[in-house]
Image (cartoon, rainbow, N blue to C red; front, side, top):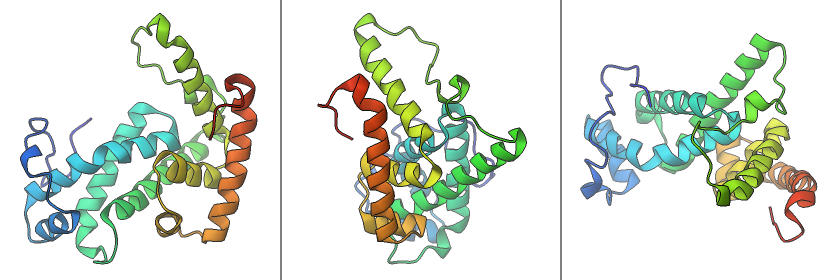
Length: 210
């Protein structure tokens, strides 16, 4: 990933340099950050950057952009962490920031391009320019189909499907992240599952569940 854009936060270092202290609770880490411990925020980044970039990637379908938006998410988190409520779960709070960052990016692209064709290959291509083993072609094809199907969902359905199915968040956590009612979340998830099944089942067969 690129270097973060705030001078006081440099997350580039030896991978796993703080692995020995990763047993620190999230609440303890937040307290230490608020007390000026920059190493504590490095631990937060190491612990949560992977799920955050995965979540953002599911929203924007662009690997490079997801990396940039993940950096922006943690920059904002670093600047705002002293305002986080004590009763808020750190992962939920970070997902909320990531959701806003991803939505801002999507809407900026829509304004810039008049529209975003989510079915366009340039939007959903997951290629990393590495050769794909022959025995991995089938799973890659299915993965690409899932990504295209996810990208075709409208924003609200894609958001709840990503959080509930791919990241195993509870309805209560998703409601806090999105600001939606649990009733709306359940309705959107039901419709998202139906759309995903309709798109995937002809290829994957009835044994594939979403």
